[in-house]
Length: 316
Image 1 (cartoon, one colour):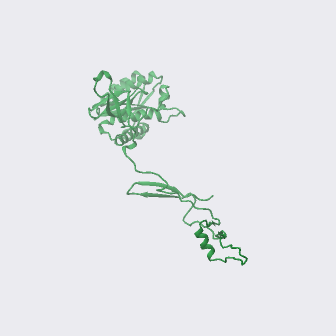
Image 2 (cartoon, helix red, strand yellow):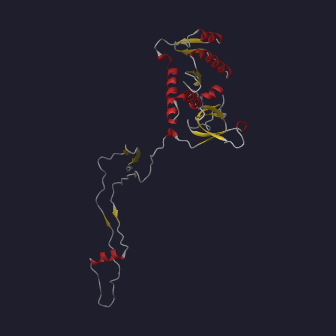
Image 3 (cartoon, helix red, strand yellow):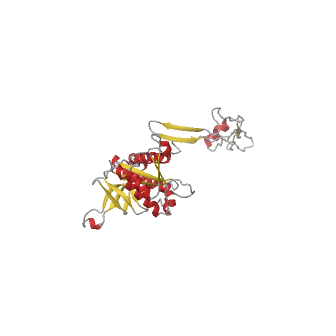
């Protein structure tokens, strides 16, 4: 049961527009009223409904629903018993809504009683980001003609502060309450905030959000060069070894073992420096047999949860 006392939800999807509309209901007998409201909204937007496809449940195959469909000249098609694949679009939509709502609740750390708000949020986002037959158009744009904005979206369950209007507080009372984001109201009209301390829902436009944390987890995974340095393999070529003897000690040590020239004419050349010639290695640098082009080395530590892929740069 939800916070508002609802136990069921029914979701309608316009097949061509891919537009969704979800209704949170307490009993299955309210389905007829939901169909009436959904058809009115489509008619106001200028769309015509010709066929309603549903399963053979009693909430759809009843006198109230049939009467409502006859008034709008809509054909009602029923799937065969125990054959949900005949209404695959609706079944897939139900699976997506339920699984996404489940993820929102657990990632946001909210109780299961918030399932209705999670379902509304999922449908709200799908209508503004889902695919449609028209490239570059969202379901909301095809249905209402208005452009979908995403700048006001926040992570579900983010902590925030809701402003308390001056009409509801005294002079020295606090001006805000701590709550959690659980839904939206229209296009930038406002937010639905759950005040856990008071166990009630608040609608407000003046909301200050805290830093958003995805998944409500603080990951310790970092990617730095010191943790996982990239291994570079040099091309197969001669490696030049340059030895520069700059210090006096190295120079004296190198010249003491060699032949030192001194003349009897009184000219002392003992202090003259003599450098060792640069030597080259003629050994060919070969790659190991286990390295292949495009191979990656992945380091993972199960105990710490660290992961850092390091590409091996191969010569072209």
